[in-house]
Image (tube, rainbow over all chains, first blue to last red):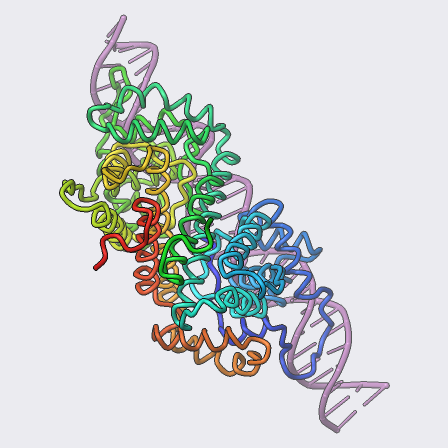
Length: 258
Length: 258
DNA sequence: CCTTACTTCGTACAGTGTACAACGTACTGC
DNA sequence: GCAGTACGTTGTACACTGTACGAAGTAAGG
C-alpha cells in the first residue's frame, strides 16, 4: 500500500485539523492521551524510522496504548497522515521579509521548504490528493504567497508561481529521499552497486549506439562523484526556477544580478 | 509498503534488463512463458487497475500461473518494477529532430514524457532510488540528450538541464495522478468534498488572519473550476521551464519569441 | 539408468489496516 | 442514589501483501 491522505468524511477530518471538539457532553471515561500526543508521536516515529515504520501497532506502542485505541482519536491512518503534514507545516518559520526583494523572499521560501523536507523526509513521500486544509497549511500558504508581494503578478498567476516553486522543492526532496533510501535499504553501497554493474555495462553499452549517453553520463558521474547528486540537482534547479520567475516578473533575465 | 525498485543483486537485475540469459545448459522443463510476457502482463495490469493491483497473485492469475512461479522469471517484485519501467521507456518515440530548434526539441521531449505518464500513470509513483540501466532507459537518455545539441552547454550542464526538465514533468504527472486517485478512491467527488468542507472552512478561515490566502485561493479556485487543475499547472510550469533554459542557453529571455 | 538441475506450485509466515464485540467507566435523567 | 447509556479501551479476527520453503515432476548429462 502507498501512503495516501484523505479518504474519510472531509468535515470530520477538517474538525480534527482545526481541533474543533465534537459538540455535546462526553460520557464515559476520558481519553488518556491527546490528539497532539498521537500526532507528535507519529511524527517522531516517521522522522526516526521512516514512514513505513508508522504502523498502527508501532504507534500504539509508542503512546502506550493498544493499536485499536488510536481509532478513538483518529478515524484512520489516512487522516493521521493529514494531521502529521499539517503539524509540520505549522512549524515552518514565518519571519517578516517585507523589506527584502521578491527574489530573496522566494529563495528563502524554497530554503525553508527544503529544510522542512530535510527534517521530515517522509513528508515528500505522502501523496496528498487533496491537501489537508488545516491551520498549518493555511499559515504556510498565507506566508508563502506574501513572498510575491510587489511583483505585480495577478492572483491566479501568483498561486501558479508558488505552486511551481513548491513542486520543484518537493520533487527535489523526493529524489533525495529515494536516493538515500536506496543507499540504506539495499545493503549495496553506491560503489558496490557500480562495481557490480560495471562489467556487464561495459559490455553492453556500445559507444556507437549510445555515443552521447556514454560521454555525458561519464562526465556527469565524474562531476558528482556518483550517478546522481541530489544537492547539485537542487542548486541547479533552484537557479533555473529563479531565472524563470525573473523572466515572468521582471520581463528579463538579469534583474537583481551584478 | 511503497513501490520501490532495485534491492537484489545488481548484476542479475542488469542481465534481466538486457535479456542476457544465464550461461550454461538448461536442464529441467522449459519455462512455459517468457520474461516479456510477464512484464507485458504486469504493465497491462498496472495500466488498467493501478500499481496497487499489481500483486504477485494477480499477476500470476493474469499469466495463468501460480504466484510462486513468477519467481523463476524475476527475483522479486522490485526487479519486476525495474523491468516494467525500462519496457515503457523503450516505447517512447525517438524521431530525428535535428532540424528543429532546441526549444522545439525540448518541448517535444517534455510532451513525449507527459504522454508516457498519461498512458502509464503508475510510472510516476515508482520510486527509482537507482535507475534501471536497461536498454529502454539508455535509448531514452541518448535521445533526450540530443535535444540539447547545438546549445553550447557542456556535458555536465546538459545532463543537469535534462534532469531538470524530466523532474518537472515527473512531478507534474505525480500531482495529476494523485489528484485523479483522490477523485476515484475517495467516493467523494470534488464538489461533494468542497461542499462538506465549506461550512467549517467559512467559520475558521478568518480573513483578517489569512487575507492573502483567502483572496488568492478563491481566485485560483475560480480560475481552475477546482482547487487544483493539473493541466494548467503543467502548462504554466512548462512555459517557466523553457524560459529558464532560454536564459541558461541564450543568455536572454526572449529568444525564439516574436 | 541414475543423478542433477530446473520449473511449478501448495502451504505457511510475518506483517499490514481495521471491523467487531466484550468490558468497564463516567456522565445524564430520574 | 440509581438505572441507562454513550463512550474509551482492548483482544481477536479477517483479508491482504511479498516471499521462504519443500514436495513433485521433468528434462538433460554422465
